Length: 490
Image (tube, rainbow, N blue to C red; front, side, top):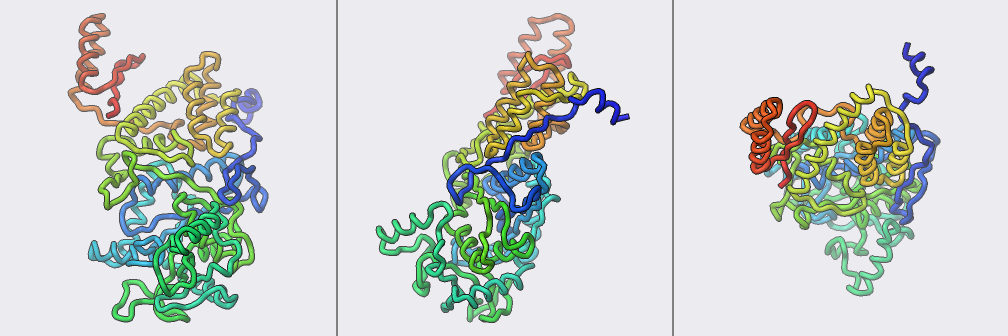
């Protein structure tokens, strides 16, 4: 009889909206209305991790951002096909074309094969992504080593068109022959300024065999005096693909020569993504992507996250301190994706506390509404904010306002949560059973004693217990179901 219920209660459906989706396109530097190549369908590629070690929380921000992009498009009715690469060869320690392969570094560090290291940390990455609310099963995760043939074929096309040259250490792309090089993010203007001020000094690194500072490796030769853990035979000799070519080859193989959206971190703009554009457009005679979307960095205590600085924090560290993994997602959602963030444990504690309270209020709102969601101006505004270049801070603020708004009836309040959850991904519809820091047994015992005192109308003792609990670093809240204790941040 669900059809009869819908007929009698047509407004019981979640809020729908015809509001368009807007994204800030790095290619144009403007916020633009989203329009896919094919109506109703989106092909989206995201730069994924180099799996030579665990991914710190800064590495999780980019996939979370890509998740938000996919969620807002899915909620708007698009069918989104997603690919995120797993780099398991070719990414050198300099992030350019010099130094040791990161995969070889990881393999030697742990005394295992490069393949074993790659699979171990690829799985760990996906597990972390799941914990922060991503649907990893909606994404294809191709490995660079699985597409070496396609990479070689693309290099051959570039070679046939006269865009490559050989040096003693590899095959390079000649950026001077691609008129649009550096067009993403205004890098071309930056390069001209660097050349004028520094006599053509390279922003990538010194290599006197390169014709131009910005030229990049398509294929690197194996060392003559040793054998690499991963190497392949090619028309140019034994070696391995450069870091940049893997993305272009896998995009073409899995999504086609031209896609709708390419995402990544802002650190990818100057080199990696401009290199992708150059080699793909030459090889395919088409623009690589219509929309280039980039998220800003997260720092730790105002410093860049770095293993060398010893300030790398992992999701496992957050869990070990008793915080729910989704607290990290909530922390990231508090700032716009293009705004840099500063991580502190105090800030994460505040995010965990806010999320814990939001889950509690969500349960109460669902019970009050008896699971019935009605649309309202607030729910429509939430959707509009999320579709306006992923304005997550404004959407979160509206969710909190709705939970306090006495002018909204219970189904309308629940309707706001129903409208927000598909994009926010905070488990608002079905909050997890473990919703924050574990409360020590002695604190729980004090809370139970306080409940007994309140039932006996011994308010003096109840107040004493409240003060005692709060002095131990916890927050006390009175509810219909008794005392609720949460850990204060810091």
